[in-house]
Image 1 (cartoon, one colour):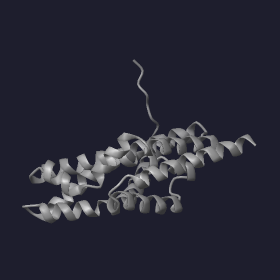
Image 2 (tube, helix red, strand yellow):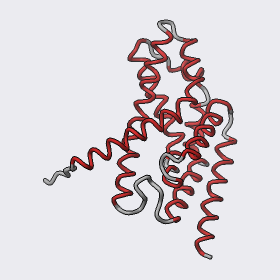
Image 3 (cartoon, one colour):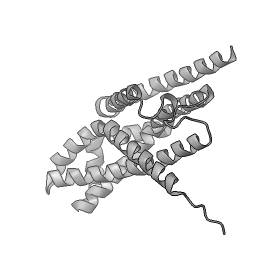
Image 4 (cartoon, rainbow, N blue to C red):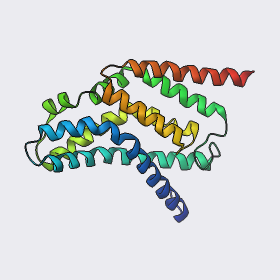
Length: 209
C-alpha cells in the first residue's frame, strides 16, 4: 500500500494558509454570533461568561476544520494551475461555476433549514440546552455545523475575487450578519441566490461574445 507523503514545504504552506483562513473566518463569522452569545449568557444558570466562551470555542472549532479544508483546496488549486497563489482563478469559467453553485445553494431547502436555525438562538437553547462545560462545547459545535451548512457556498466565493480580498470579506461579513442576526426570513437568501445566478450567467454570456 502506497502512502501519500507531504514535503516540509507543502506542510508549511498549508499551515500558513490554514492560519490565514482561520483568522479570516473568525473575523467574518464572529459578528453573527453576538445574538447567540447574548442568549446563552441570559439563559446560563452557571458562570455566564465561561459558558459563552466555551460555546464560542466549540463554534470556532467547526470553522477551524473548514479553514483547514479550504487551505488544502487553495493549495491544490494553485498546484494544478487553476488559481494564483492567492486563489484568484486563471479563467472566468471557474468564477462563473462557483457563482452558480453558491446561487443554486441559496435556493435549496437545506439552506433554508440551516438559516432558520441560525436565526433562532433562543429556540435552540430552550430545546437543546446542555449543562456544564462539555454541554456548552457541544452546543457550540452543533451551532457551528448549522452555520457552516448555511454559509459554506458563500465562503467558496473567495476563489472568485481572491482569498483575503477586503471588499469581499467586508461584504460577506455584513451579509452574514444581516441574514442571520437581523432578518427572520429567507428573503435575503433567495434574493442573493437569484443575483448570484444572474452574475454567473452574465459572465458566461460575455465569454461567448
